[in-house]
Length: 391
Image 1 (cartoon, rainbow, N blue to C red):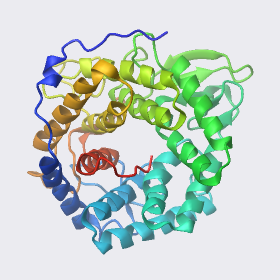
Image 2: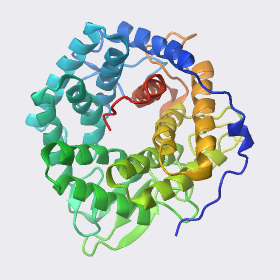
Image 3: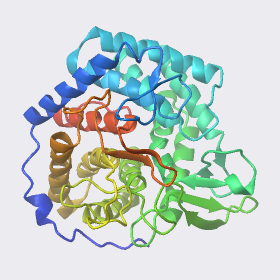
């Protein structure tokens, strides 16, 4: 059982003025402007996961985050209709086709992050059979990591050893690729794996107080749950902000595909835990254990992910929490737009003040390519609430 702490100060969200479509259009204009500026640098290459000095480096298509820039291109094409965004995204989807066909660094759990915003989004827009086939091939790759003993998709690392027999909260957002694959192929094997993984996540990664573990280990011989730990959070018993945001996004999308009421129920509890720990400007510290006396960094990327999850969740059966979530969406988006973009900085990123991995001192107080993407996705949902998601 996961406890329900409710919203401790609902008024701070209920009084938030609506983040209007006009505001979203103005903000998306900036997203398109920055993405347009970056096209020449990031056609054959991709932005690094995190910036350094607010500037993304150029990398090959060999990281888990490459799909997010292609996703930005599709969002900008959807918004502007400019053919250059579409042509560049199509070229990058060719790179993703090559990556999955030649199995270039795909033996991990992040296939959804790679192929949903790139090839699934592209298929939704262009109906390209190559993009569809690439994404289905990525789904086939992802289900090879499903562990029957324990019923979960194993995170990074070699399959087999006890020390790598683990799941992580992030993987909830790779499940949409599997649900989508079942929808387009008619083969339920993908959605069956996704559903089992989501249920195992609910039972083990979500704590009784509705916070989330980052990582959870299982006995490799029996599948018995062993322990929850952290990899990027402050401690094993704290709540890593981005992990909590992945939970909001992941469970809300899982409900959309499965209509399992428990997914919405636990998602509300996870969301409430997150919202109750937001500081005055509505942008979380990189771990929710911190408060305004901590002098710790914010994570704007966690805020952007959470907003997308709240937009999805608000459309479900959330009862009295709907006006709170709608207010939170407006409050967080306005704070990101007014205080966290790179408008006054020399940067090729969009959202600054993000954190990739504070314990390892990677990407601290920088731009995160997934933060840029999820911010743009949230804006597009405000501009066109009926748009088709790639997730």
